[in-house]
Image 1 (cartoon, rainbow, N blue to C red):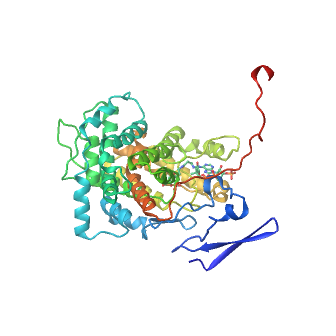
Image 2 (tube, protein in one colour):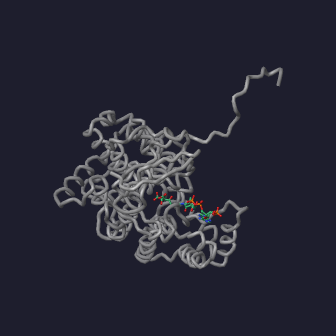
Image 3 (cartoon, protein in one colour):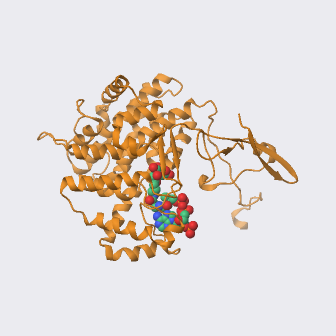
Length: 428
Ligand code: SDX
Protein backbone atom coordinates (compact mmCIF):
# COMPACT_ATOMS: atom_id res chain seq x y z
CA UNK A 1 0.00 0.00 0.00
CA UNK A 2 1.13 3.60 -0.59
CA UNK A 3 2.15 5.56 2.53
CA UNK A 4 2.74 8.81 0.65
CA UNK A 5 0.35 10.87 -1.44
CA UNK A 6 0.50 13.71 -3.95
CA UNK A 7 -2.00 16.55 -3.89
CA UNK A 8 -3.44 18.27 -6.92
CA UNK A 9 -5.45 21.44 -6.57
CA UNK A 10 -7.76 22.37 -9.44
CA UNK A 11 -10.78 24.70 -9.68
CA UNK A 12 -10.41 25.41 -5.94
CA UNK A 13 -10.69 21.70 -5.08
CA UNK A 14 -7.90 19.51 -3.77
CA UNK A 15 -7.34 15.89 -4.79
CA UNK A 16 -4.91 13.39 -3.24
CA UNK A 17 -3.34 10.54 -5.16
CA UNK A 18 -1.37 7.65 -3.66
CA UNK A 19 2.37 7.58 -4.34
CA UNK A 20 3.91 4.12 -4.73
CA UNK A 21 7.57 3.22 -4.44
CA UNK A 22 9.24 0.45 -6.44
CA UNK A 23 12.24 -1.61 -5.38
CA UNK A 24 14.44 1.13 -6.82
CA UNK A 25 13.92 4.08 -9.14
CA UNK A 26 11.34 6.89 -9.30
CA UNK A 27 8.14 6.66 -7.29
CA UNK A 28 4.85 6.71 -9.23
CA UNK A 29 1.76 8.80 -8.59
CA UNK A 30 -1.25 6.54 -9.08
CA UNK A 31 -3.61 8.76 -11.09
CA UNK A 32 -6.08 6.10 -12.17
CA UNK A 33 -8.92 7.97 -10.45
CA UNK A 34 -7.86 11.43 -11.70
CA UNK A 35 -10.22 11.69 -14.68
CA UNK A 36 -13.16 10.42 -12.67
CA UNK A 37 -12.48 12.94 -9.89
CA UNK A 38 -11.33 15.99 -11.89
CA UNK A 39 -12.86 15.49 -15.35
CA UNK A 40 -9.40 16.22 -16.76
CA UNK A 41 -6.83 13.99 -18.47
CA UNK A 42 -3.10 14.11 -17.90
CA UNK A 43 -1.17 15.14 -21.01
CA UNK A 44 2.13 13.38 -21.75
CA UNK A 45 2.86 12.87 -25.48
CA UNK A 46 5.79 10.45 -25.84
CA UNK A 47 5.09 9.27 -22.27
CA UNK A 48 8.22 11.02 -20.96
CA UNK A 49 6.75 11.15 -17.43
CA UNK A 50 4.45 8.13 -17.56
CA UNK A 51 4.83 4.63 -16.10
CA UNK A 52 2.59 2.45 -18.27
CA UNK A 53 2.77 -0.65 -16.08
CA UNK A 54 4.34 -2.38 -13.11
CA UNK A 55 7.21 -4.64 -14.13
CA UNK A 56 9.90 -6.75 -12.43
CA UNK A 57 11.92 -7.63 -15.53
CA UNK A 58 14.32 -4.77 -16.36
CA UNK A 59 15.46 -1.69 -14.52
CA UNK A 60 17.26 1.27 -16.11
CA UNK A 61 18.85 4.18 -14.26
CA UNK A 62 19.37 6.67 -17.09
CA UNK A 63 21.40 9.11 -15.00
CA UNK A 64 23.84 6.48 -13.75
CA UNK A 65 23.90 4.41 -16.94
CA UNK A 66 22.67 1.30 -15.13
CA UNK A 67 20.80 -1.59 -16.81
CA UNK A 68 19.65 -4.58 -14.71
CA UNK A 69 17.79 -7.69 -15.87
CA UNK A 70 15.97 -9.20 -12.88
CA UNK A 71 18.59 -7.35 -10.77
CA UNK A 72 21.70 -8.57 -12.60
CA UNK A 73 23.90 -5.88 -14.28
CA UNK A 74 24.02 -6.13 -18.07
CA UNK A 75 27.84 -6.18 -18.23
CA UNK A 76 27.98 -9.21 -15.90
CA UNK A 77 25.36 -11.06 -17.96
CA UNK A 78 27.09 -10.15 -21.23
CA UNK A 79 30.40 -11.44 -19.86
CA UNK A 80 29.22 -14.62 -18.11
CA UNK A 81 25.90 -15.82 -19.54
CA UNK A 82 24.72 -17.74 -22.56
CA UNK A 83 21.73 -16.27 -24.38
CA UNK A 84 19.60 -19.20 -23.22
CA UNK A 85 20.50 -18.38 -19.61
CA UNK A 86 19.47 -14.72 -20.09
CA UNK A 87 16.27 -15.79 -21.85
CA UNK A 88 15.42 -18.10 -18.94
CA UNK A 89 16.19 -15.28 -16.48
CA UNK A 90 13.97 -12.78 -18.31
CA UNK A 91 11.09 -15.25 -18.60
CA UNK A 92 11.27 -16.81 -15.12
CA UNK A 93 12.86 -14.18 -12.88
CA UNK A 94 15.79 -16.26 -11.60
CA UNK A 95 19.04 -17.58 -13.05
CA UNK A 96 18.47 -21.27 -13.86
CA UNK A 97 20.17 -24.20 -12.15
CA UNK A 98 22.20 -26.37 -14.46
CA UNK A 99 19.29 -28.82 -14.76
CA UNK A 100 16.79 -26.01 -15.46
CA UNK A 101 19.10 -24.48 -18.08
CA UNK A 102 19.66 -27.82 -19.82
CA UNK A 103 15.90 -28.51 -19.92
CA UNK A 104 15.11 -25.01 -21.23
CA UNK A 105 17.86 -25.16 -23.85
CA UNK A 106 16.67 -28.63 -24.96
CA UNK A 107 13.10 -27.32 -25.34
CA UNK A 108 14.05 -24.19 -27.26
CA UNK A 109 16.45 -26.12 -29.51
CA UNK A 110 13.69 -28.49 -30.55
CA UNK A 111 11.40 -25.67 -31.60
CA UNK A 112 13.92 -24.10 -33.99
CA UNK A 113 12.51 -25.64 -37.18
CA UNK A 114 9.64 -23.83 -38.90
CA UNK A 115 6.69 -25.40 -40.71
CA UNK A 116 8.03 -26.36 -44.14
CA UNK A 117 5.24 -24.46 -45.89
CA UNK A 118 6.34 -21.25 -44.15
CA UNK A 119 9.33 -21.17 -46.49
CA UNK A 120 6.88 -20.55 -49.36
CA UNK A 121 6.13 -17.12 -47.85
CA UNK A 122 9.61 -15.87 -48.69
CA UNK A 123 9.08 -16.56 -52.39
CA UNK A 124 6.31 -13.97 -52.44
CA UNK A 125 8.84 -11.20 -51.72
CA UNK A 126 11.24 -9.62 -54.19
CA UNK A 127 14.81 -10.74 -53.53
CA UNK A 128 15.73 -7.12 -52.75
CA UNK A 129 12.91 -6.65 -50.22
CA UNK A 130 14.17 -5.15 -46.96
CA UNK A 131 14.57 -8.10 -44.56
CA UNK A 132 12.57 -6.23 -41.91
CA UNK A 133 9.60 -6.18 -44.30
CA UNK A 134 10.02 -9.95 -44.65
CA UNK A 135 10.21 -10.36 -40.86
CA UNK A 136 7.00 -8.38 -40.32
CA UNK A 137 5.19 -10.60 -42.81
CA UNK A 138 6.59 -13.98 -41.89
CA UNK A 139 6.34 -13.56 -38.11
CA UNK A 140 2.78 -12.28 -38.45
CA UNK A 141 2.03 -15.39 -40.51
CA UNK A 142 3.19 -17.71 -37.72
CA UNK A 143 -0.28 -17.41 -36.16
CA UNK A 144 -1.61 -19.10 -39.31
CA UNK A 145 0.61 -22.13 -38.65
CA UNK A 146 0.58 -22.52 -34.89
CA UNK A 147 -3.12 -22.29 -33.99
CA UNK A 148 -2.51 -24.69 -31.09
CA UNK A 149 -0.65 -21.95 -29.18
CA UNK A 150 -2.75 -18.85 -29.75
CA UNK A 151 -5.21 -19.14 -26.83
CA UNK A 152 -3.72 -16.58 -24.47
CA UNK A 153 -5.96 -17.66 -21.60
CA UNK A 154 -4.22 -21.06 -21.50
CA UNK A 155 -0.89 -20.83 -19.60
CA UNK A 156 0.41 -23.93 -21.37
CA UNK A 157 -0.31 -22.44 -24.79
CA UNK A 158 1.33 -19.18 -23.72
CA UNK A 159 4.46 -21.12 -22.76
CA UNK A 160 4.53 -23.06 -26.03
CA UNK A 161 4.03 -19.89 -28.08
CA UNK A 162 6.79 -18.15 -26.08
CA UNK A 163 9.22 -21.01 -26.72
CA UNK A 164 8.27 -21.17 -30.40
CA UNK A 165 8.89 -17.44 -30.89
CA UNK A 166 12.27 -17.45 -29.12
CA UNK A 167 13.33 -20.61 -30.95
CA UNK A 168 12.16 -19.73 -34.45
CA UNK A 169 13.31 -16.13 -34.73
CA UNK A 170 16.93 -17.10 -35.59
CA UNK A 171 15.66 -19.54 -38.23
CA UNK A 172 13.28 -16.98 -39.74
CA UNK A 173 15.96 -14.25 -39.65
CA UNK A 174 18.56 -16.49 -41.28
CA UNK A 175 16.02 -17.49 -43.96
CA UNK A 176 15.36 -13.79 -44.68
CA UNK A 177 19.08 -13.31 -45.26
CA UNK A 178 19.45 -16.46 -47.38
CA UNK A 179 16.49 -15.43 -49.52
CA UNK A 180 18.01 -11.97 -50.11
CA UNK A 181 21.28 -13.47 -51.39
CA UNK A 182 19.67 -16.27 -53.40
CA UNK A 183 21.18 -19.08 -51.36
CA UNK A 184 19.27 -22.16 -50.14
CA UNK A 185 17.84 -22.14 -46.63
CA UNK A 186 19.99 -24.00 -44.10
CA UNK A 187 18.12 -26.06 -41.50
CA UNK A 188 18.87 -25.70 -37.77
CA UNK A 189 21.26 -28.21 -36.21
CA UNK A 190 20.38 -29.31 -32.69
CA UNK A 191 23.91 -29.89 -31.45
CA UNK A 192 24.80 -26.18 -31.83
CA UNK A 193 24.29 -23.29 -29.40
CA UNK A 194 21.50 -20.80 -30.03
CA UNK A 195 24.01 -18.34 -31.45
CA UNK A 196 26.14 -20.90 -33.27
CA UNK A 197 23.01 -22.33 -34.89
CA UNK A 198 22.09 -18.87 -36.14
CA UNK A 199 25.56 -18.22 -37.56
CA UNK A 200 25.54 -21.56 -39.40
CA UNK A 201 22.00 -21.03 -40.77
CA UNK A 202 23.07 -17.57 -41.95
CA UNK A 203 26.55 -18.11 -43.37
CA UNK A 204 26.67 -21.89 -43.89
CA UNK A 205 26.03 -23.46 -47.31
CA UNK A 206 25.04 -27.05 -48.15
CA UNK A 207 28.15 -27.39 -50.29
CA UNK A 208 30.58 -27.55 -47.38
CA UNK A 209 30.77 -27.81 -43.58
CA UNK A 210 30.52 -24.50 -41.69
CA UNK A 211 33.11 -23.89 -38.99
CA UNK A 212 31.93 -21.65 -36.16
CA UNK A 213 34.57 -19.14 -35.04
CA UNK A 214 34.34 -19.11 -31.21
CA UNK A 215 35.32 -15.43 -31.02
CA UNK A 216 32.52 -14.51 -33.45
CA UNK A 217 30.08 -16.83 -31.65
CA UNK A 218 30.92 -15.14 -28.34
CA UNK A 219 30.54 -11.68 -29.91
CA UNK A 220 27.14 -12.57 -31.41
CA UNK A 221 26.00 -14.06 -28.10
CA UNK A 222 27.02 -10.85 -26.35
CA UNK A 223 25.20 -8.74 -28.95
CA UNK A 224 22.04 -10.82 -28.49
CA UNK A 225 22.27 -10.44 -24.70
CA UNK A 226 22.78 -6.67 -24.99
CA UNK A 227 19.62 -6.38 -27.11
CA UNK A 228 17.40 -8.84 -25.20
CA UNK A 229 15.23 -6.41 -23.25
CA UNK A 230 15.11 -2.76 -22.29
CA UNK A 231 12.14 -1.84 -20.08
CA UNK A 232 9.13 -0.11 -21.71
CA UNK A 233 10.76 1.11 -24.95
CA UNK A 234 8.61 1.89 -28.00
CA UNK A 235 8.51 -1.63 -29.45
CA UNK A 236 7.96 -3.32 -26.09
CA UNK A 237 5.13 -0.88 -25.38
CA UNK A 238 3.72 -1.79 -28.82
CA UNK A 239 3.79 -5.48 -27.95
CA UNK A 240 2.09 -4.79 -24.61
CA UNK A 241 -0.57 -2.61 -26.21
CA UNK A 242 -1.29 -5.18 -28.92
CA UNK A 243 -1.38 -7.90 -26.27
CA UNK A 244 -3.77 -5.91 -24.09
CA UNK A 245 -6.51 -6.44 -26.71
CA UNK A 246 -6.05 -10.22 -26.45
CA UNK A 247 -4.26 -10.50 -29.80
CA UNK A 248 -2.29 -13.72 -30.21
CA UNK A 249 1.44 -13.59 -29.32
CA UNK A 250 2.64 -14.02 -32.90
CA UNK A 251 0.64 -10.96 -33.99
CA UNK A 252 1.95 -9.00 -30.99
CA UNK A 253 5.58 -9.78 -31.81
CA UNK A 254 4.99 -8.85 -35.47
CA UNK A 255 3.70 -5.48 -34.21
CA UNK A 256 6.84 -5.08 -32.11
CA UNK A 257 9.01 -5.83 -35.15
CA UNK A 258 7.19 -3.17 -37.15
CA UNK A 259 7.76 -0.56 -34.43
CA UNK A 260 11.40 -1.52 -33.91
CA UNK A 261 12.10 -0.88 -37.62
CA UNK A 262 11.90 2.90 -37.17
CA UNK A 263 15.28 4.73 -37.43
CA UNK A 264 14.65 6.49 -34.11
CA UNK A 265 14.51 3.04 -32.47
CA UNK A 266 15.88 -0.29 -33.67
CA UNK A 267 16.54 1.01 -37.18
CA UNK A 268 19.23 3.28 -35.72
CA UNK A 269 21.95 0.59 -35.96
CA UNK A 270 21.55 0.45 -39.74
CA UNK A 271 21.30 4.26 -39.94
CA UNK A 272 24.35 4.73 -37.68
CA UNK A 273 26.66 2.63 -39.85
CA UNK A 274 25.34 4.30 -43.01
CA UNK A 275 26.05 7.68 -41.37
CA UNK A 276 29.58 6.66 -40.32
CA UNK A 277 30.27 5.43 -43.87
CA UNK A 278 28.87 8.68 -45.31
CA UNK A 279 31.17 10.70 -43.04
CA UNK A 280 33.96 8.46 -44.34
CA UNK A 281 36.95 10.09 -42.65
CA UNK A 282 37.63 12.02 -39.42
CA UNK A 283 38.19 15.33 -41.24
CA UNK A 284 34.52 15.41 -42.19
CA UNK A 285 33.22 14.95 -38.65
CA UNK A 286 32.92 18.69 -37.81
CA UNK A 287 30.52 19.14 -40.76
CA UNK A 288 28.19 16.47 -39.34
CA UNK A 289 28.48 17.71 -35.77
CA UNK A 290 27.42 21.15 -37.04
CA UNK A 291 24.44 19.63 -38.87
CA UNK A 292 23.41 17.67 -35.75
CA UNK A 293 23.42 20.93 -33.78
CA UNK A 294 21.53 22.93 -36.42
CA UNK A 295 17.89 23.27 -35.34
CA UNK A 296 16.89 23.78 -38.97
CA UNK A 297 18.56 20.58 -40.08
CA UNK A 298 16.61 17.36 -39.35
CA UNK A 299 19.90 15.42 -39.30
CA UNK A 300 20.68 13.68 -36.04
CA UNK A 301 23.77 11.74 -35.05
CA UNK A 302 22.47 8.19 -35.36
CA UNK A 303 23.51 5.95 -32.50
CA UNK A 304 23.60 8.98 -30.19
CA UNK A 305 21.14 10.09 -27.56
CA UNK A 306 18.48 8.20 -25.68
CA UNK A 307 15.12 8.89 -24.04
CA UNK A 308 16.27 7.36 -20.77
CA UNK A 309 20.10 7.31 -20.73
CA UNK A 310 21.45 10.73 -19.92
CA UNK A 311 24.77 9.04 -19.32
CA UNK A 312 26.72 6.47 -21.28
CA UNK A 313 24.53 3.52 -22.41
CA UNK A 314 26.17 0.60 -20.56
CA UNK A 315 25.51 -1.58 -23.60
CA UNK A 316 27.57 0.76 -25.80
CA UNK A 317 30.64 0.19 -23.59
CA UNK A 318 30.40 -3.60 -24.00
CA UNK A 319 29.73 -3.14 -27.71
CA UNK A 320 32.84 -0.98 -28.15
CA UNK A 321 35.05 -3.59 -26.46
CA UNK A 322 33.47 -6.29 -28.62
CA UNK A 323 34.21 -4.28 -31.76
CA UNK A 324 37.91 -4.29 -30.87
CA UNK A 325 37.85 -8.05 -30.23
CA UNK A 326 36.07 -8.95 -33.47
CA UNK A 327 38.13 -6.70 -35.74
CA UNK A 328 41.34 -8.03 -34.16
CA UNK A 329 40.19 -11.65 -34.56
CA UNK A 330 39.26 -11.07 -38.20
CA UNK A 331 42.34 -8.96 -38.91
CA UNK A 332 40.17 -6.10 -40.14
CA UNK A 333 41.07 -2.45 -39.68
CA UNK A 334 37.82 -0.72 -40.57
CA UNK A 335 38.26 3.06 -41.07
CA UNK A 336 34.63 3.40 -39.98
CA UNK A 337 35.65 2.37 -36.46
CA UNK A 338 38.23 5.16 -36.43
CA UNK A 339 35.53 7.61 -37.53
CA UNK A 340 33.20 6.28 -34.80
CA UNK A 341 35.86 6.69 -32.11
CA UNK A 342 36.79 10.20 -33.25
CA UNK A 343 33.14 11.21 -33.56
CA UNK A 344 32.45 9.97 -30.04
CA UNK A 345 35.48 11.83 -28.69
CA UNK A 346 34.55 15.11 -30.38
CA UNK A 347 30.86 14.87 -29.44
CA UNK A 348 31.56 14.05 -25.80
CA UNK A 349 33.65 17.21 -25.53
CA UNK A 350 31.16 19.44 -27.36
CA UNK A 351 29.00 21.76 -25.25
CA UNK A 352 25.83 20.91 -27.23
CA UNK A 353 26.10 17.19 -26.52
CA UNK A 354 27.22 17.73 -22.95
CA UNK A 355 24.36 20.11 -22.20
CA UNK A 356 21.78 17.79 -23.80
CA UNK A 357 23.41 14.73 -22.20
CA UNK A 358 23.81 12.93 -25.51
CA UNK A 359 26.00 9.83 -25.37
CA UNK A 360 26.56 6.85 -27.69
CA UNK A 361 23.77 4.31 -27.36
CA UNK A 362 23.59 0.59 -28.07
CA UNK A 363 23.41 1.26 -31.83
CA UNK A 364 26.54 3.35 -32.21
CA UNK A 365 29.14 0.57 -32.41
CA UNK A 366 27.02 -2.49 -33.18
CA UNK A 367 27.07 -1.89 -36.92
CA UNK A 368 30.86 -1.96 -37.07
CA UNK A 369 30.85 -5.44 -35.51
CA UNK A 370 27.98 -6.81 -37.57
CA UNK A 371 29.50 -5.50 -40.79
CA UNK A 372 32.87 -7.10 -39.93
CA UNK A 373 31.14 -10.44 -39.28
CA UNK A 374 29.56 -10.22 -42.74
CA UNK A 375 25.99 -8.98 -42.24
CA UNK A 376 24.65 -6.42 -44.72
CA UNK A 377 23.36 -3.25 -43.00
CA UNK A 378 19.80 -4.25 -43.96
CA UNK A 379 20.09 -7.21 -41.57
CA UNK A 380 21.14 -5.16 -38.52
CA UNK A 381 17.64 -4.39 -37.25
CA UNK A 382 16.62 -7.99 -37.96
CA UNK A 383 19.29 -9.09 -35.48
CA UNK A 384 17.97 -6.55 -32.98
CA UNK A 385 14.44 -7.98 -33.44
CA UNK A 386 15.77 -11.54 -33.10
CA UNK A 387 17.30 -10.78 -29.71
CA UNK A 388 14.53 -8.47 -28.48
CA UNK A 389 11.90 -11.16 -29.12
CA UNK A 390 12.94 -12.73 -25.82
CA UNK A 391 12.31 -9.46 -23.97
CA UNK A 392 9.06 -8.86 -25.82
CA UNK A 393 7.86 -12.37 -24.94
CA UNK A 394 8.84 -11.93 -21.28
CA UNK A 395 7.05 -8.56 -21.09
CA UNK A 396 4.00 -9.94 -22.91
CA UNK A 397 3.74 -12.83 -20.43
CA UNK A 398 4.11 -10.44 -17.51
CA UNK A 399 1.35 -8.23 -18.89
CA UNK A 400 -1.06 -11.13 -19.51
CA UNK A 401 -0.51 -12.38 -15.94
CA UNK A 402 -0.95 -8.91 -14.39
CA UNK A 403 -4.35 -8.83 -12.58
CA UNK A 404 -4.47 -5.05 -13.11
CA UNK A 405 -3.98 -5.24 -16.86
CA UNK A 406 -6.81 -4.09 -19.12
CA UNK A 407 -6.98 -3.03 -22.74
CA UNK A 408 -4.75 0.00 -23.30
CA UNK A 409 -6.86 2.94 -24.44
CA UNK A 410 -5.30 6.40 -24.00
CA UNK A 411 -7.38 9.58 -24.44
CA UNK A 412 -6.41 12.94 -26.03
CA UNK A 413 -6.50 16.71 -25.89
CA UNK A 414 -8.99 17.51 -28.68
CA UNK A 415 -8.12 20.68 -30.64
CA UNK A 416 -10.24 20.03 -33.73
CA UNK A 417 -13.46 21.80 -34.86
CA UNK A 418 -16.36 22.17 -32.42
CA UNK A 419 -19.60 20.56 -33.59
CA UNK A 420 -20.99 22.17 -36.76
CA UNK A 421 -23.77 21.46 -39.30
CA UNK A 422 -23.18 19.71 -42.65
CA UNK A 423 -23.08 21.98 -45.71
CA UNK A 424 -24.15 20.48 -49.10
CA UNK A 425 -21.39 20.59 -51.70
CA UNK A 426 -23.15 23.14 -53.95
CA UNK A 427 -23.35 25.52 -50.98
CA UNK A 428 -19.66 25.43 -50.02
C1 SDX B 1 17.06 2.53 -29.20
O1 SDX B 1 13.84 3.42 -25.55
C2 SDX B 1 14.79 2.49 -25.63
O2 SDX B 1 15.15 1.87 -24.65
C3 SDX B 1 15.32 2.22 -27.05
C4 SDX B 1 16.48 1.27 -27.12
C5 SDX B 1 16.09 -0.13 -26.75
O3 SDX B 1 16.98 -0.93 -26.38
O4 SDX B 1 14.90 -0.48 -26.92
O5 SDX B 1 17.52 1.70 -26.26
C6 SDX B 1 17.02 1.19 -28.54
O6 SDX B 1 16.10 2.89 -29.84
C7 SDX B 1 18.25 3.41 -28.97
C8 SDX B 1 18.09 4.84 -29.62
C9 SDX B 1 18.40 4.69 -31.11
N1 SDX B 1 18.09 5.91 -31.85
C10 SDX B 1 19.05 6.71 -32.32
O7 SDX B 1 20.25 6.56 -32.13
C11 SDX B 1 18.52 7.83 -33.23
C12 SDX B 1 19.18 9.15 -32.82
N2 SDX B 1 18.73 9.50 -31.50
C13 SDX B 1 17.61 10.46 -31.42
O8 SDX B 1 16.66 10.32 -32.43
C14 SDX B 1 17.08 10.59 -30.00
O9 SDX B 1 18.17 10.71 -29.18
C15 SDX B 1 16.15 9.54 -29.45
C16 SDX B 1 14.99 9.30 -30.35
C17 SDX B 1 16.88 8.26 -29.24
C18 SDX B 1 15.66 10.05 -28.10
O10 SDX B 1 14.96 11.19 -28.37
P1 SDX B 1 14.13 11.92 -27.18
O11 SDX B 1 14.27 11.27 -25.89
O12 SDX B 1 12.74 12.15 -27.69
O13 SDX B 1 14.94 13.23 -27.03
P2 SDX B 1 14.65 14.49 -27.86
O14 SDX B 1 14.39 14.10 -29.29
O15 SDX B 1 13.63 15.28 -27.13
O16 SDX B 1 16.07 15.20 -27.82
C19 SDX B 1 16.40 16.03 -26.75
C20 SDX B 1 17.28 17.10 -27.40
C21 SDX B 1 16.64 17.72 -28.64
O17 SDX B 1 17.12 19.05 -28.73
P3 SDX B 1 16.11 20.24 -28.30
O18 SDX B 1 14.83 20.05 -29.10
O19 SDX B 1 15.87 20.03 -26.81
O20 SDX B 1 16.86 21.49 -28.65
O21 SDX B 1 18.50 16.49 -27.85
C22 SDX B 1 18.59 16.61 -29.27
C23 SDX B 1 17.20 16.93 -29.79
O22 SDX B 1 17.28 17.71 -30.98
N3 SDX B 1 19.04 15.31 -29.76
C24 SDX B 1 19.97 15.12 -30.71
C25 SDX B 1 20.10 13.74 -30.83
N4 SDX B 1 19.25 13.13 -29.99
C26 SDX B 1 18.59 14.10 -29.34
N5 SDX B 1 20.69 16.00 -31.45
C27 SDX B 1 21.55 15.44 -32.33
N6 SDX B 1 21.74 14.13 -32.50
C28 SDX B 1 21.03 13.24 -31.78
N7 SDX B 1 21.23 11.93 -31.93
